[in-house]
Amino acid sequence: MRSLVFLGLLALLSGCNQQDRECLAKVGKRLVEQMEDAAGTSPDPVASGIQAVRGSVGGGHLDSRVVLRLRWERDLAGATIRVRATGPAAVQLEGTLRDEAQRGRALEVAKATSGVEQVEDKMQVK
Image (tube, rainbow, N blue to C red; front, side):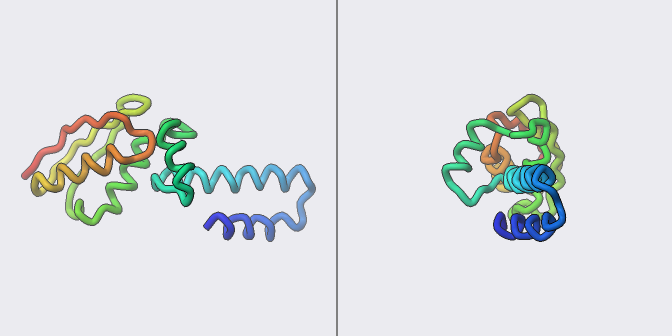
């Protein structure tokens, strides 16, 4: 994916001066980093570990990363979960789940998200 972004940037940069190219290259690199952070994934296991330690690069998007990961989790289909950042490395999960297995999975996914150190459980089982 990273190579596709850079190839696309190269195509766009053909009519730009050196300063524009450098600026757009930085923007492209930052975009890829933010996409990887949002998904909580990285192709490099070392980079993933570093991201987990340092938390969010941009800060303030912790709840968005958790929401994205919860939304793609098959075991949480049909669950209504709201996520709110309550601190720099803390989130609160609130909503309605069908069973305790969903609760456990939601907590597990949230805790495994890059930058999350603490998860507050305010979820209810029907």
